[in-house]
Image 1 (cartoon, rainbow, N blue to C red):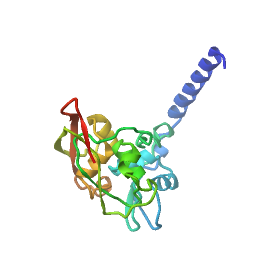
Image 2: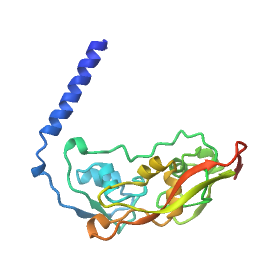
Image 3: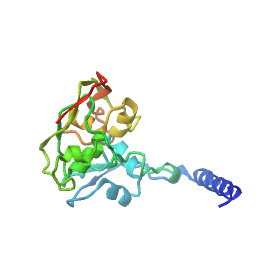
Amino acid sequence: MARSGIVALTAALASASVASAASCDTSTLNTTTYLWPVTEEGTTIASIAAAANRGLCNVARYNFMADESIIPNVGQSIVIPPEVCPDEIDDTSCVIDNYNSTKQCLMGGPRLYYTVNQDTYAKIANRLDLDVDVVANGANASAVLEAGQFVKVPLCSPSMCSYEPFQFDETVPQVYKDLADEYGATVGQFMMLSPTYNYSQSAYTGQSPPVIDLPFNCTALSSNVTIIT
């Protein structure tokens, strides 16, 4: 396509986006929040969001989720957020995509990862931004692991992270990926520090938002780093 055609197409798309936003009548949006019960094994947050006509990341952030890819257990309930205009629907920005990582060890720890529902070594490596082979250590990377087990993570030595308590803000919906990107850590490290936390219904119940451990300033302490397997 000629440059003039590309410019014209870009301008048209931008104009359509602005028009869509301008034409959204917020008074017609359903601002009710409610609980979506999980009744079938294998239900994903993405499928819940689609069925509720909400964005995947809108749902994930409203529930302060550790990771949208964690499969909820039957009997749990997910909070459905208020409806938003089409230009505010977000299905991508909360999704972790480190599947091609070549990193061989984790800076600053922790050492043990606590498995969640439907975990695999590939999912764990993705959350830790590590090469899947170093996490799987010869095992089948796509095999489903039993929840509630500890997996040893290869560590960079010497290295360290700083840690401090962090409380989510009910006015700023976030997921672990937002914090990991901001503080230079990984989603997996957040999960390892608060191993039994997956999400919160506080936006619906009115309770105080959850408090977690926040890793930051994760760095090597020497130019000569070895790997603890």
